[in-house]
Length: 304
Ligand SMILES: Cc1cc2nc3c(=O)[nH]c(=O)nc-3n(C[C@H](O)[C@H](O)[C@H](O)COP(=O)(O)OP(=O)(O)OC[C@H]3O[C@@H](n4cnc5c(N)ncnc54)[C@H](O)[C@@H]3O)c2cc1C
Image 1 (cartoon, rainbow, N blue to C red):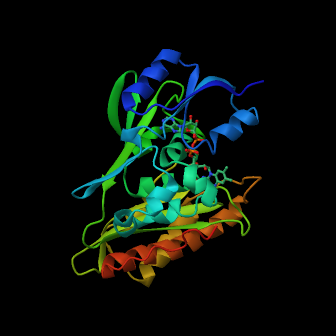
Image 2: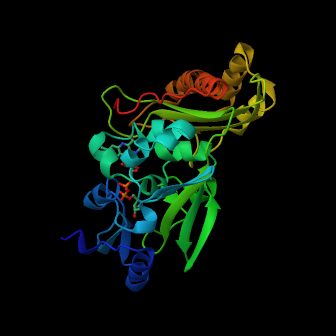
Image 3: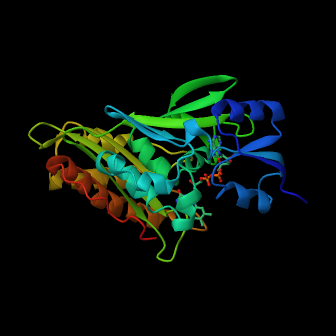
């Protein structure tokens, strides 16, 4: 049986949305196909009449900086993000997460939009977009609108989009300013080329003297059915002087409050709880150091 009948490569948003409307639910959006084609082939999703490839659509494939705001098209690949110097310097966690997705082949075709639309709480790019407080622009019911990234997720593997009818267009967020920085770390099986056992992205803004964390955003995944901010950790951090005692307190609270589930393919709950501590000890001091010094050298890219 054929997995699809027609393959379309529209070049404009209007062509892509018209095609989706014309097929009335019988077509499906495809980015790099690294998730979708396996799912259809393995019978986890039904074959479709048509695939609408968005990777040639102009509005969806650009990275655009406008002052301190950056906009990233949903069809931008992980490799494009890794090569973007302004993201590396001012949204470092995103480069560090996209830089470890799969292997080079997956990063060269897999898109940031596909990573979010697939809606897995362990997805690396998604974890960083949450810590960066991104917004997503979607096309749904004939309208374009912006939604906070956390409102994109309805359940494990389920976004608010119906990818047979709706489009994820682009993301936007504020680039780090003075005394702001981020970091991403993940735990992976040594020989693994897949989703992480656990990943963490941390964003911080420091006070002028660099001693106090004025504001933080922390995303660790997977610890819930959908990507999520770790509010209990942020509460401990916000307004506190950053020192070794604070790090110990953060670790204590995170270990006590987070209840990651056991996954038969990846790790037990107990192991993941240990890794919550390991990741916080790696990512938080790194983000703080970057915010204090303004010196940023992305770590870990392309190691897996
Ligand atoms: C070997 C391998 C290793 C991997 N390793 C990792 C990893 O380390 N970390 C990680 O996070 N992921 C990993 N993945 C998963 C996957 O590669 C990423 O999630 C990737 O970003 C998916 O993007 P894509 O463009 O290939 O999505 P696709 O497969 O094209 O699409 C995924 C889903 O999103 C929908 N969709 C895509 N784009 C849009 C859009 N613009 N609007 C609406 N719906 C859309 C599709 O219909 C489909 O349901 C791996 C996959 C493989 C095969």
